[in-house]
Image (cartoon, rainbow, N blue to C red; front, side, top):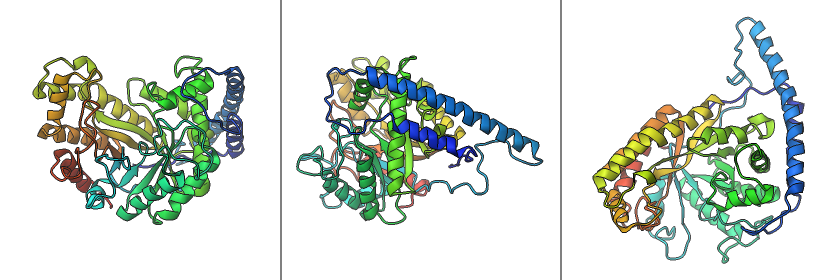
Length: 444
């Protein structure tokens, strides 16, 4: 599934782009609120100036690539495609397993997802080729600056060092790769220190996935609001290019800091899966260091759901599944395949950072809640998820990370494979995911 891009001969230009991008970033992050106003004129001007320089450099890089491609075409028997792997290119990033899991709420007091419960590791292991810890590290809410592992974690009883240690130890015990989302205002030093700590705990053959923040495109979450606060613009239209420039520069900085600690970590661009998803991906990709060459994977979502326009009071379970299948056939599945296709066309691994059922009524109507809860134990929930994953893997996906292992089932959603550890072995959602992992040759 994986391919690598042919290195440009104009390597010095790439170094220059990285250097310029790094100057877009504040040298010392400060605690910041979610709301409030700020004078963003200076950073807007700086981003515009830096982007102009980057564009000029990129034109020269592309001109050099064009001449290189022409030279290749002129050479008998040569391959003119610059994205085709050639002898001497680095080996593709390893693929450890087809199925991973978001441990969405692990570690919270009195929550079903309790890693100290007897039998937890044994039940987790079959679905955890990769474990993603975005939510227990509260990446959507942790907007303050962090520059040390000894800084307070979101849960005040722990430091970041303590939290990352027990998370990495859990991965080491069950043989799972570790998926790390850096907090949005983490310094490069923090990222390097965090990845080095995780690397020191994992076994040599376990992989670290690295990304920055979570769903920066999602206007309802803290990371989007924080980037908007810093740049002063939304992610859309001509003015929104400053939003993407900042996103790309911070993501690229995170990748560089992570590779300092672990040269083999998998660098992930998490993107939007929607009608405009590939547009978002392209805007970040083209602003990353190396004009998008210096990362390894594009991550989409593989959810299936009843669209809000399909929801009606009194909807039955039969109607809910019919609506969900129609929504996936006409919307979600199309966007998923588009995202996968974009990734593979650009020589990147295609993975999903979250996925699974997404049956949730934003208006929390009791009748719909009862129906959606009933869907969780209906055999069609496993059948539809199987069809979603079959289509995604056939299109080129090589890793699906389910959201999530355990959670309460209530009007905030039915995210967990089960609502308690005791109910996990008998859950159709859990059983079908284990079967799919086995069929795909899960390595752990």
